[in-house]
Length: 283
View 1 (cartoon, rainbow, N blue to C red):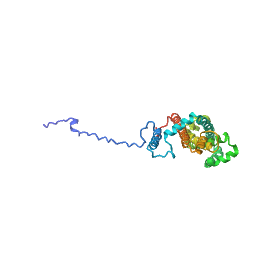
View 2 (view 1 turned 90 degrees about the vertical axis):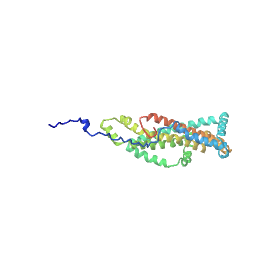
View 3 (view 1 turned 30 degrees about the horizontal axis):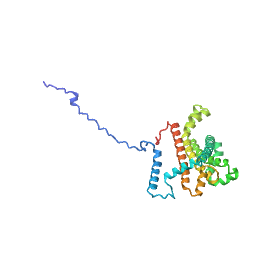
View 4 (view 1 turned 60 degrees about the vertical axis):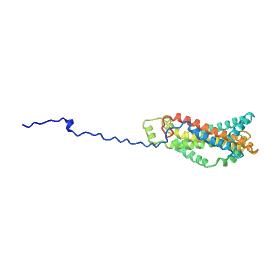
């Protein structure tokens, strides 16, 4: 009689070899981790190069004075009482012009972005105004408004409202039509539609326009105070330049640069806090 031997299944089955797991290296395409104080690195390096060139004599002080000379001149102007009042009046002009330009830009963009009739009445005029150079408009506004504060604030407001209007209206136009249809389907009111759909969709464009508007206010301030003024930082620079005091001129430019950098930084911080829900390359 033949005896049959039953082998265990584990012994008869072919050994199972686990497939090698392919560890594919993910190629990172983003800009990488954020660098602390990244915005300040460039200006600090530029200041270092400027100081090094001045200390080694490679930079002629008649072309650009050394940083320490500019600082000492600024302290002297401040202690003499010349710089303080001019700074105050310049800040007041820029603030008033910026406030008017901000309100005008937002109001016009909302009217043009939320209404076909508003767009027909406003958008074309703003585009024409955008094409006109501000320097070319100064003589006309002097004839209309004189050379007082109204003229200066008006020019600054124009420089502010145009970038805010352009960017905000573009953001409104870019809102997906499906969101509008969804809001209509669920029966949102006009105010609910603006609060829940329009504002979140337009905020990124608004902040872009706000940053450009802040910068525009400082640029326009320099222009109006150098063209026709009896006070202000631009007037001080113009007067000092007529006497060949390049240190004082560089002091004024440095203050404009600090104001522009600081105001842009403030807007960025507000933007980051307001748009904290958004994930972008900026982090």
